[in-house]
Length: 306
View 1 (tube, rainbow, N blue to C red):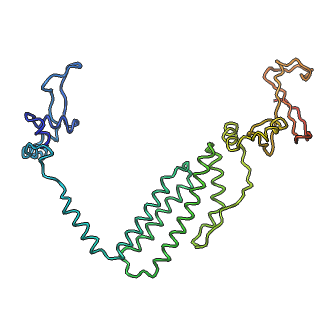
View 2 (view 1 turned 45 degrees about the vertical axis):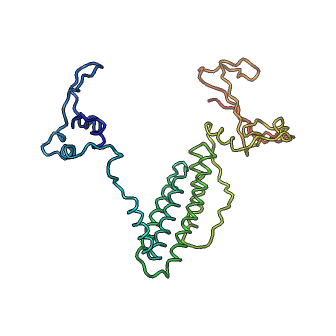
View 3 (view 1 turned 30 degrees about the horizontal axis):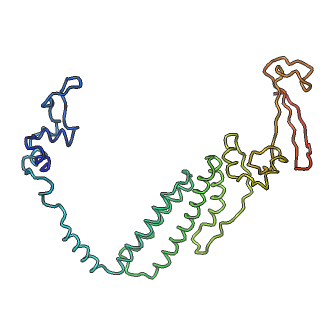
């Protein structure tokens, strides 16, 4: 208010309210696009009440620019307070603050990682904060530090488990742009290692090859194929010998090829000699094969009406 008065010597309390708190000014200006001066309006009910504190402060505030006003913070005095606090701080209290700050900062860094919103990962992160609070709270004001090392080791072990799960979750989320598949893969990983995430201080080996097969939808094929690097120049000959190139030259485990013929549009050699009773039926030929670069095996050939 003092700075506003200094910058606007002829200003009234209503002028300050219109500038600082527009919600407390009820405009009554009926002009279209050409506001009149002074503006027509009135103060809100709370600003119009008798004994309003804002108006009292306005009446008492001197007209002074910020450069001439007394500083709200005495930097020298506040610095002396900090030095005195550090000089009189007990070593155990300093250690307590350093440990709590270190764990809280580490947890916040983990929590900022983008992992696709996996519910299981979100639950483990919430449990991490709860475990951290309960463990570190027991250190406050504790004169006996005999159990301090054991408590901190157990908390570090919890951090190790969460960190490894989070790394895997973030990796799957960033590499595989298919939410359903990413969620399913992380769930399998989580369910396998959940029983192993006890309070044991022994390190767990997280390297395992999973053999679970997931069905890939039509809209998810592009995301899966992007995981496979295109073949080099020396490997380009595989494209000619392979049956299609859905995975950048890498052959999938199995593939189904379906040929469908709409009877009303087909007059060729493979069309049915008997006309269909409806134009909506489709003749479908399915061949289940096993092919390599040298031979082709047909396991089954089926014709059906869909």
